[in-house]
Length: 90
Image 1 (cartoon, helix red, strand yellow):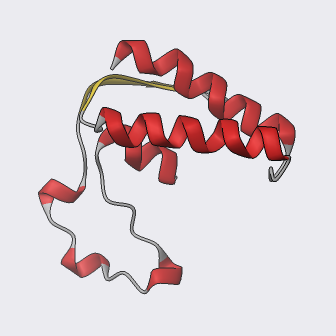
Image 2 (cartoon, one colour):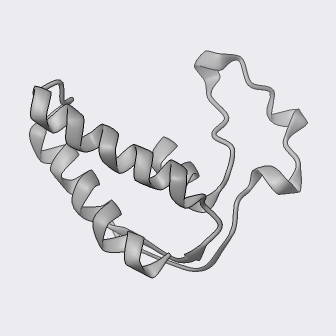
């Protein structure tokens, strides 16, 4: 979910952080011209995410892959693949 919020420019409300959804404002929701989703992939076209944050997340995933600190290698590979596929469309 954090990756989706980075791509769309949304704020991620986390139960662990004790975020209060009653404080949610329209600007917290993020933007995209078009979103295409299926059970295994989500594509953001014209998203409102900041490219610096997206690039930082891609680097973080690549670093985790190199240091083998992954949740599961298959999941992280899918994350990197998805971000790299979506990045040119942003």
